[in-house]
Every structure is written in C-alpha cells, then in structure tokens.
Image (spheres, rainbow, N blue to C red):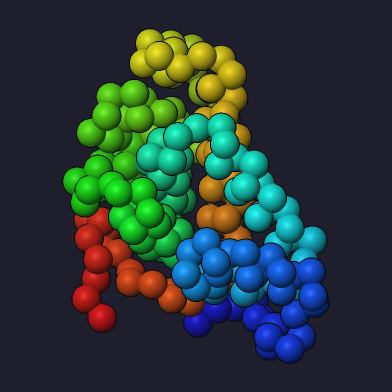
Length: 184
C-alpha cells in the first residue's frame, strides 16, 4: 500500500490537472506515481519536465534499456513494472531485450554499453572508473552522449527513489525477478 497520500481528483490544483492530463494522453492512463506527485505540483512539474526534455537526448530504446537497468539496480518494483510496460507497448522491445536491459545489457551492442554504463553510474554513485568510460566510448558514444546517459540515469534514480519511498501501488502488471509479467 502506498505510504504517501494521493490527493482526491477534486483537490488537485488546476496546473497539476493539466500535467496529469498530458501524462494520461501519452500513456493512455495516469500512473499512480503521477497521481501521488500531484500532491506537490512543483515536484510533478520537475519530473514531467525532466522526462520531456531528456526524451530528446537519446533514442527511445536506449532510454528504456537505461530505465530497466537503473530500476533493477535500485530494486524499484514499480519502475520495473512501468518501464517493462512502456518498453513493450510503446518501445517495441522484445521480452529478451527487456530482460537483458534489466541486467545492464541489450540485444544491440551499443545500447548494451549504455545500459551497463548506467548501472556502473548507479552502483559506483557516479565514481565510475576510466575503464568504464573507455568501454562506453569504445561502443561509439561521444562525451555529449555520455553526459546524456548520466542525465537519463539520474532521471530514473529520481523516480526510483520516489517510488521506493512511497511503495507506490502497482497499477500495471507486476514483473517477477526474472523480468516476466506476473499473472494477476
């Protein structure tokens, strides 16, 4: 059960209602995380603005792979379920690629390098080694793209932390530790 209060729809400020409407239009529903964030419209705006801006810095499948790797590293069940759903429904990723993403890899070698680097950023708290940088560069990433990988990683750290603190109620199918959907 979620530990933070979700405001009743009539108690959500107008500006936050608009942001929730945009999220709902994009995903087909308003996830519980965003409903919770509506209790603090400034935080909701930060999260939605960050997501919107960072959607332009790397291709969608790379961002999905990073989201899965980071969420797995942080043990965020809500984010794992949500990113599995989004990567499948909107990203066209296969079950195998989603499972690999959770392990910091991918069917695509360049995406695998980004996911692995994102995992290293999380596990080392940003104190990555020279070899980690060399590996991601060897996969073809430029320094501006490496900055993008770090920024996307931090975006998912933020939502992982919010959902881990809240223990956000799942509103999509759960995933098991192996990465498959859990029957409901």
